[in-house]
Length: 241
Image: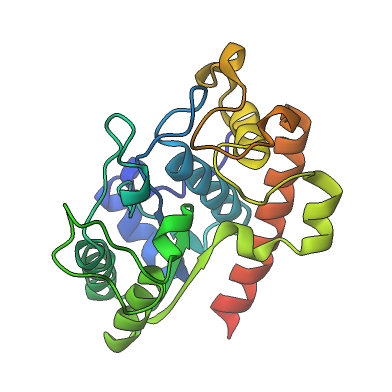
């Protein structure tokens, strides 16, 4: 049985128009395009947050829609590796706010900025060659949510891993959570798209979490289910509040 469509990029204008009066909230996934070791594609952060968002929205059909992701984040700390891409913090925030402004124009009232990259919630970010001035406004995704609220939206920002209780994480993950291209993300990759994971290259290397060898597809499946379950619960509260 096919899942109901929740991705606005896959829908026609008529299909969206027919759905909008039933929609209670829209998820804006944000990720990154950056190195994830020798074994995971640069889209990992973006792919996993979209994967989780789409499934949660499907389980709450027709109340939730999902926008295309903001696939470029704040990744200056990974620029030493080939073709990691990064935005200025101000640009990153403004892109999200402009998306929220468009959503408000279409009478969307509630927005969840769902993050999949740790650098997007860092308190301070600075790279002398790229950034004109240091970012000192706190978490960029929180700043985006604040500006979205100033537009009159009910908006919130969170990272998908914030929702999974520590005791549940401990039942699944042995090492760092979420880490970087380690046990957590590699397990999710093995579950999401095993054909994209260079499984013969899964090993410790510079720039990733050292627990990568503990990754399994079973852990990825369990973590995915827990993440979706708690996101669904969060969304149910968010749209009824």
